[in-house]
Length: 58
Image (cartoon, rainbow, N blue to C red; front, side, top):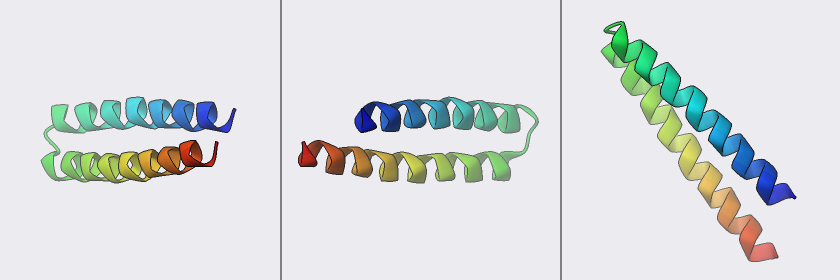
């Protein structure tokens, strides 16, 4: 159950983050778009690390 919730959270964060990056780059805000992309990558890395830890517990 907890793994499913973490996956749902990661999917939601990825969709919102990608939409944010697309909108920022579309407006020509390159620096903020790249900052959002970097934040998204860091959150993904942490999320996958949490998922790996949860899978190891089961």
